[in-house]
Amino acid sequence: MIAKELLGDLLSIAVSTGGDFAEVFAEREHATRIHFVSGKVETIRDQVIAGVGIRVFCGTKTYYASTSNTTREGLLACAAAVAGAVGEAQGKRHIDLTPDAIAKRHIVKRYPDDVPTRQKTDILREACMGASMVDERISQVDGTYLDTDRAVLIANTEGLCREDRKVRTRLAISAVASDGTENQSGFYGPGGGVGIEFFDAVCPKSVGERAARQALTNLTAGYSPAGTMTVAIENGFGGVIFHEACGHSLEATSVGIGASQMAGKLGQQIANPKVTAIDDGTIVGGWGSYHIDDEGTPATRNVLIENGVLKNYMIDRLGSRRLGLPMTGCGRRENYAYEPTSRMTNTFIDNGPDKNEDIIASIEYGLYAKEMGGGSVNPLTGEFNFAVKEGYIVRNGKICEPVRGAALIGTGAEILQNIDMVGQNLKTGQGMCGSSSGSVPTDVGQPLIRVKKITVGGRS
Image 1 (cartoon, rainbow, N blue to C red):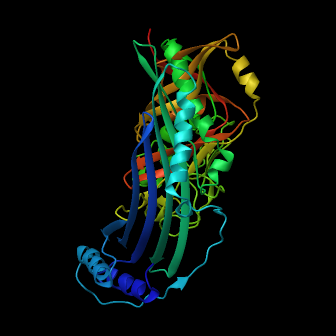
Image 2 (cartoon, rainbow, N blue to C red):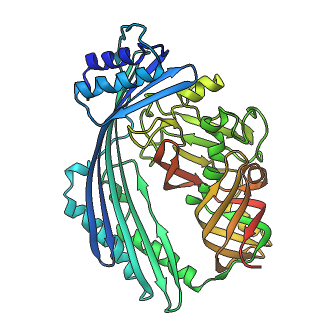
Image 3 (cartoon, rainbow, N blue to C red):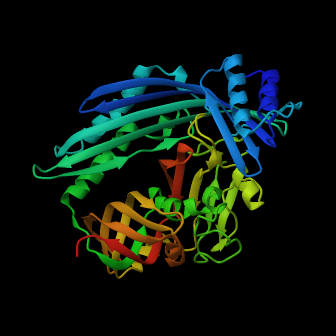
């Protein structure tokens, strides 16, 4: 992407005004996005993002500049700009770069660029038609097909010089059910860190059908009661609870400046002993996986919480300097225009000791959250509020009638202690996570869990 000699020149210029470390990040990504609305293709967008970001450290202070001008002159000007922000010229130093080939674990069988757009459109159309055909009450179906092929190069003044290529594919369907007086929606959006072979395992029609059935369930559901109760949260996207309520509080971005409820708690019992939580960027085919992060550090399997004890944080290069702890391969950014920060990859609560049927049977009265939706959280306090996308009342150990409008309200510290049963059907769900370094693909996950006590928002 950039010649080794030019990389050395850029790094040398970047640290010529007093910086103690510099890094060059180069990227080229090709993305195809197809949007289908009301029975027809609305848009087909082919987008190429290409550019370079250069970062300089002075202790724990960073300076960043980026450019889409990837000519030699444009890159030299970018390096000079970030160096000028640091201070006055003090003299260049020679940088020795050693290209380092990384072991490849993510094998792509069918690259998106090798597949005609018409074939991709047919996949999306099949999914949308699958949703429309479920029931005459399905009044609207929106669908999105997405694939990305991203190549990166990272070099720094420690001599690191690494390249990587990551492909992702996703299909997302939203369905609306209507009875003539009100509308309710359903959604399903599976994805993976693979090529078009993703659809050898995932049937597009079934994706649409799942979204439609959720919409129909909500259309016939009554409103959820409010109050403090026991809640069982299903696997897959149910893991968004841990991701938002606890995961962000374990990122060095907040921990390193003391803006986290988990700061200073390494080695402490912060969760029920049944809870083990992991961030694993090495999972083959994972939506949030990669070989190296956007700082060139290899992805790792990082045990965050083990049997309820806080073992580690998610640590990028800046967080490593602030905390004095090793990097964990989680420095991520949406693209070259963003400075990287510590981010989650594939983050999940691991399988536990309880049988799934025992979890439901243990609830005399409560809520079964089959599918979670979006929400919000404050990493400093851990306070969260999440919508239940599909929920059911549990009575006498049996899943009963569907309810809608439920929300789970609490704090990360409380929910970690109140997870008192952890099942054995671990599954992940795909999403996009937004933070100061932009939006990045992340997996969330868990088996079925029981929260013995949590506030449920609904109708009194």
